[in-house]
Length: 592
Image (cartoon, rainbow, N blue to C red; front, side, top):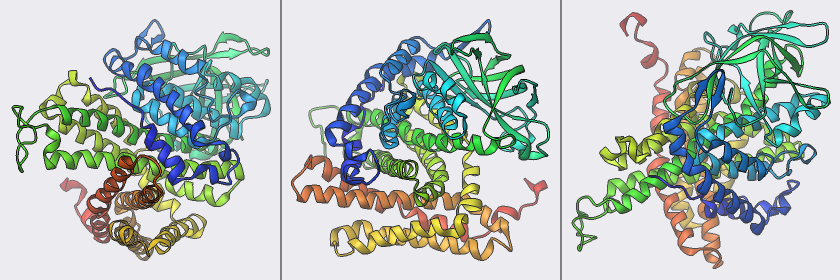
């Protein structure tokens, strides 16, 4: 069965060689020296590898079960959740005033990857709580924060987000859940929500649901939507738990993957709720939570890719099949290991180069989130906003592809459930769908984010790439293997942007038909930039005689693979975009 080892060395390389966190002016970063981050990552890695990973297969097989209105999580989940809570891991990057440790978000993201790689279904219980806490921090009143956050930070209470309804997914203007105001300032919430991750379970004392509903007077569509706090158990003035609220689980969804997480149908029947944020300002409040969740979902994409890669690498080294075309590599055995074959190497390197590039990309974005939150840096916030749909959409698409490649390496055994590799494929699939399906991410990127601030943030991104290339063009080795491919890919991306500008107003379908390709183009350029930066950092460490030379040389070779074999996909995406809307829209609806 697959096992998992946290990639601590790679995370340390990114934090200290690539991002150089201790030299950053972001408050709190000066304390992130290598020994400190190493100690945290090592401990988190032990928890992930020794406690969470062994439960991954159990969660997949057992799933959650609903009995007499109570959801029971798989065997071992409660003890693991208690270990997570007792270690204070949920509060790692949350404010100290509510019981957190106040460390930077970039470190929380690295730890979150470990837990997700080890057991994605389990990690959702913590992840949804973390996202709900973000909504409270941004929009909750002081009383609401004092009432809910200490227990949620400690994970004595967990949190959810309730958006989707049976007739209404992305188009939230159609939602029907109602909120009727009461004389005491509360609201009566009535309606049904579906696909609610961690909606009901036996891991915590209370579950705090954040529910989108329509209150009177808000107008049609999304204008009438507000966000409400609806706890499973009402909370008494002294903080103790009171009566059961009017919210119950109606069913557990039977899903393709993430069986260890209880994805629920939630029924609200005159449940007591409290407004959080402004009346009829629910979309703004909910998107605070969703934006954090979308970056977290992007992380899920490469976290599953990392776990699947580790499994397929071990299999490729052990499984004997065929002989190397250049001569026997294992002459004493009946065959050579799979890893000698070029096509197996290709699939392994596609996984490895993606996972390492995606990790660097996301931790770089997390550093910008820290800059935005801790320094009120509007430029960093704008750039992260631009990149969020790329992180969510591109990384989950490619993460799924990587998991499929890992399964392919197993051959027929990969299709057999007992091997365990298919779970990574099934678990990774949902990340392309929830928190806004990836087609929506592409439309958001092209339809909204490119034009944000008059286009200043996309131009800032292009300037960043140009500046890096110019700064390093004197390095011949870096230029040939990294800078020249990056320059070509960046020009492809700019050409696509110019096409949208020329065609978008007179023929919007021309832009929207190419939106998905543009999202992938931008994802490739972002990973290309990360690989060029990592190659420079690795070579600098080699020149200085610092670090693990074998690791650093492997880093550069992996980057060269990505630049030569993956980054040229921008040319294909550009050709698709420049074909316009006709190939997509020409076929009459009746002809499908």
